[in-house]
Length: 292
Image (cartoon, rainbow, N blue to C red; front, top):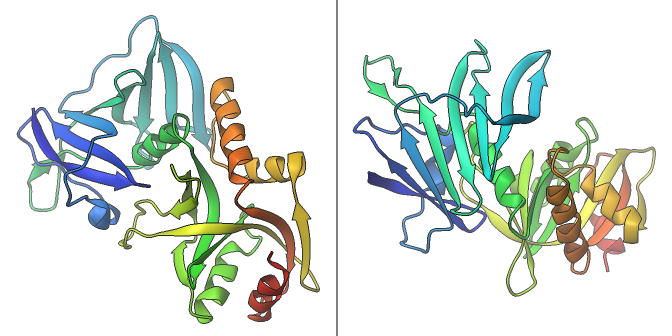
């Protein structure tokens, strides 16, 4: 087995190893998430050039579909997760993977692909496996993954979360015009750090982007409105509103309880507000005026 490198995701180190001689190919979005420093490994990924059979005693725990086509299936086999992932275009098996929470190890099984130059390689982290790895990280660490846009301006981080169409990306662009850095406008990892501070991180996307992070102070849940408005949310109301936009799988009660506990901790350091938004740059100064 040889070490290929290390990926840094939300400050966690994923060591990537291979059991075969074929080169490993990663999407362009991973380019700036490759760690150049030797740090303690938090999770291990081992890549194999084969497709294995599912254990006979494994039972189906969860499956994700898109227009009745399978994206992935999660099976439970004693203390091991067994995941079967399908190609988004042909719906044939793309990879199979196992994860052990005891050893913090992913084993990824995939077959070689041939590129335009007639050269073969392995693509172990092709979508949707990599985001699933980040999701399972959130079930074990002080971390949540959320559908949101995040920006940072003058050391202050703000996050805008909600269903598609509420204006998250628009808000990110408006803040960008005011000089803010956009951390990501689709998916963010929010981590409670050992010192109690809260940081938001982007993750590898299908396009090239720098690895970015920022301290987070404010969480906003926007909706379209004829005038800008601000409603502070706290307690159960704040928790459930944030939880609604976290990326999670409902089959594991312990994971849900863990995410709720993380959000409760997060609420001690971040304000949460529901905001009506008129999409002009005036919303930026409006929010600053209302922030405590």
